[in-house]
Length: 489
Image (cartoon, rainbow, N blue to C red; front, side, top):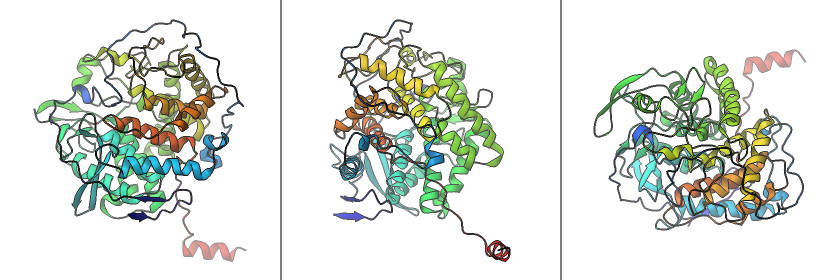
């Protein structure tokens, strides 16, 4: 047994050493336009693309009664106060911490056959390496790597954070300035470190950058790839300002041009910067990639020349959430045009529906409301989507048309987790049902534990008030400035 000391007073872990690296490798064809199935869950998504304006189904049972959820009037960024909804339900701090510890220990250091998604992968000159594996698809995704790093920094696990970052920089990152993906990360890899799809999935870059800022503030900056702040600033610059680069990608040497990850006209994150996809589907976005809570931080911490852009992007995304969600159900599509209308991709018309990517959209606006409290419409969005799912009964399905018709027969822990986080911005008592539902669940095991497990663990952190903005450490005054200040007293 290894005991890993942590600085956070609330979180202490005693865990098994990292599981051996999984040696299996996936042989698959590159996905079109960056990702057909970037998010994995309990089963493949349906390809139905029905949309409309039908009424939400009638409630199957009365909404649970309880006190109003009282969304914060001022954001946690300003107050430093993060609501612990589990504690507000009466759970004791030690019990809550134990639940988080169990999830982290199981997913990051558990049994490699049935529990773990993180696997050790040897060492290089920068130290240990590890990756987060999508067990069901037998691959490593930039999304999962960035989620793993974000979770690790939140629970103060520098060892895990650095090992994941080392693997990402060693195997996913495009350092060749001639490569179309220069400055970005391949979204899909085999566990042996070879690429399946060299295009980026921009939500990963967004989480990478923010996690790196948090790491800089929590642990300070090291050298090389562990100069976290330098890495974050460089990544933000590439995401917004990188020029188009033409060339060949993937094993089949497909020729394309990759652009910046954000559309400069719309000030929105792209689904993919791949010009080949633009020709087939038009330049478009993914609602679950919109992270205004992060953009506000970039407006404060990012390159000074770009701070106004990031502040504008946060406002644009808040408006976009209102446009892209259904006015009655609150459901968002997997992919959308920049005007918010659903996007049926050329390779999969089902992307116009509420599926696995779209689970996360409610988390994104709810966290923005909790951290910043700048747009009361986010409260309405949470109330609307939770009213819809409340009407579906206790065992609701995972995928729907935007007007609320179920298109699969199974549920998903990942969706349960995200609906729980939506309660952070909700005002109606029914929101407590979804918080209770998250707390009643256990960490997933088996084939589909990757996506469900990542979303579940993040939901535990958000709902316990432990997923926080990690602020820069206060800097001591320079000697000359301190002396001058002393002389004025």
